[in-house]
Length: 275
Ligand SMILES: [Zn+2]
Image: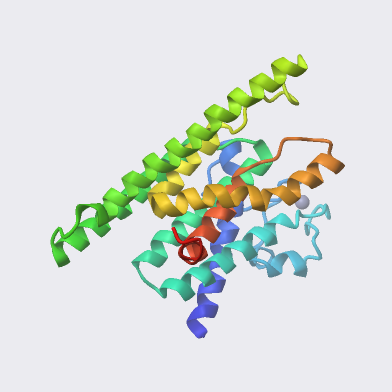
């Protein structure tokens, strides 16, 4: 219980750091220096105003020096990360897997919010993700072999990760390929150049992203995540279509959420569907 609370608080502090990454990485500002500042008046934020989740409410949602409103996204990201830590702690307790998956899902939080702001996936983050996943898998593989020997090559973590990488990437790419053909036929038929400046069904960022998910989740759960994402996105798509008159939505937040759902309850869903 006490450890759970500690993990939650730790998660909220990591969330606070993720906020810094989300804001600074696309702007190419260092994520270590300077310390936190107000994005509007650039005044440094005092440590007692920088308490995760609570700080926002203690300040009444306004910057102490310039009184401009602070985005509620800051406490939201902190609360999401804290909950993520708690759920993964309940699943794994304090273990190697806990460390592996808090790193992975924290990365997904950063990627999702950057996608919301910029409609793009920084390739460097994807590269970091794939590399991290492979390092973790190699470590698990060495551990498995020294303990059990090679029983079945297909169950080795590194093999699962590499198959996941190829499956996530290949599967999403195939969808993009046929989706793009469908869109170009549609555009030719309607004699239009593009749909709001877009000509693609999925971005290449989505393809790279699913490759990265595959390294951590393996082939099955990654493909399940791919099919779960549209169900999660549909409500916001309808909202965007009606209120913003837009067909374009950032998709990585839904792929991220779907990956998390698939990771936590995917085996249950697959059993239910008899896969
Ligand atoms: Zn300010």
